[in-house]
Length: 385
Image (cartoon, rainbow, N blue to C red; front, top):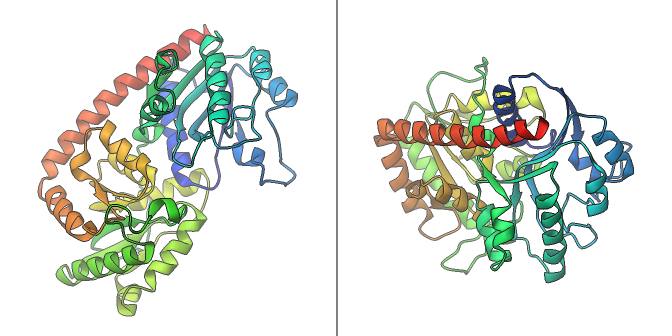
């Protein structure tokens, strides 16, 4: 079976983990090992001008029809703020071109995110696209379990036809199992993993709103907290994990707030690299951690998948929505509030102090999501029949 997979494969290792988990579930239900053609979605972004540029045009339609299945996703591709797009989103395809695709098309676990803003005319364009997907017999459309359905209901409060026409599926990262790889540069001992992000700073750290703190205040408070944690635990080290290149900048800035001696002796920065092998290596470093704290979506999803205690450092609504959907809000910590350090200390004590409770909850989530994903991929199987 030939599958055209439209998604991001370079630039964020969380995407690779997502695709890896999704493919494992697809292949287990279909009992087949597809041949994948990967089409990098970043090459159709308006800011990309390189030689690999492509578009959702007649050439894309022809390519799609040369395959047995088209998968779009996962990723946060349904953000309806692009004025010049036919759908107001990254998936800039007209209804006419979508109808011209005769191959089964599956939008898998795509995030619908309205937090960057959405004009009424853009919402109208996106609803027209959704309507076409729902009524087109060779198309399945699904959102991931990150609050996307809640956002859809907020954007279209009176459109039950849209809500009911969209499947909700677990993000593929929940099925990522990782690989054990050696890392001779890591010393023996205990590790806490940390991922911080400063992209969309105005959205993540709106100082002065509901007792909010700035990005620099967060860095100051978090640095003092980690320093005190390292002082209290002589065998503990911190691994800082970048997922995208902007995280490297965030980490570099953060380290200027930390004591020089600790940066030399007790802090490790994981490699920044993109692609499949990089994903497996970096998440193998996650597996060395007894605790992970992070702002990135897949820092949290993949830690849960690998049964690592995870604490979300919430600075964007999507992460709160995720933990609300998986019923783990007791672990939620807002990184952009005055109470950040006190809340974090409380949750760490609870998480580390109850490992059996955590393992039980992770097992419960895994069982539930295996069932949900199987139900969805059975629909995909019927679409292919």
